[in-house]
Image (cartoon, rainbow, N blue to C red; front, side, top):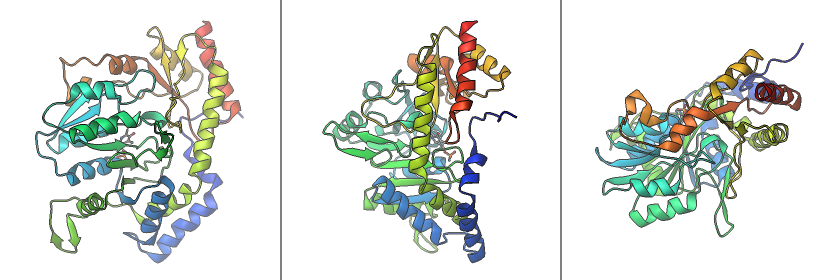
Length: 374
Ligand SMILES: *Cc1c(COP(=O)(O)O)cnc(C)c1O
């Protein structure tokens, strides 16, 4: 029987590391140190080492990571935070939740990413921070964003939920992992992310010891000393069981990134000559760890292609069908962000995961080609 094709194959990935993961989980249960057990600190250190960050503060999920970061910066209600309109809602949600003002900007058409050209136009005297989002697996062009932020005294919080493992190259040739370039970086360990746990998880990265202290304190009820609360905080922790799973999976992250890159290269080979779709662009300044493989479908045929694929038993997803300024909760009827609007109407993500093989991809590519032959 032919194997069912999935958007993400978490079970297949688990089966290959089952012994390691099961042992790590059993050890936590055996120790019963469910909260802040030793695996949490060990994983944070290993991740800091992997990414080249001075401090990694684990927390409950990627959305919390963003919220805690904004709280730790001490921004005031009414302060403006620049955020791309073409992203997952969490990037902007936390801004609004804290009484700050999300200022939504357009993105680069080729890379889907937050771009300095649109950030510049959004600057006002109330701008305090920028949240660039490294969407779908590759870095935003960070050098001009950091220069701009420095010139205007703005904080940069990278939303790195989708691109952990990607490496950005500066103009002088030096390289840094995404999430370690801005003042703060945030990531998510949601199961389907490139480094996913078996539940919820997230982390905040920084090189600044003072910020690290404030972030840690904010995530822990605003306390440094137990039962002494210096600031209003929240409660956001990474479970020990999740940390144990992540400790195992971090050792495989290099292979996982490579498997995604190989799958992307096969898609390019199979789909390179199809008229009617545009394959995702790879920028010169970043590696791409392919959280998603996202097509742009021409001539308003995206939904029809999606339906055709579904009829062939092939899943696909629209990330994202509405830009933020067209969402009810964040509606800006007079704001026009043409690239984000165009992308929302034309993008389609194909199955992309570590277990994808060329046989499955032949079937996917075959179905795409069949649609455009019709
Ligand atoms: C997944 C994601 C988040 C939020 O992560 P959670 O762990 O689900 O809270 C934030 N931003 C982006 C871009 C994401 O893809």
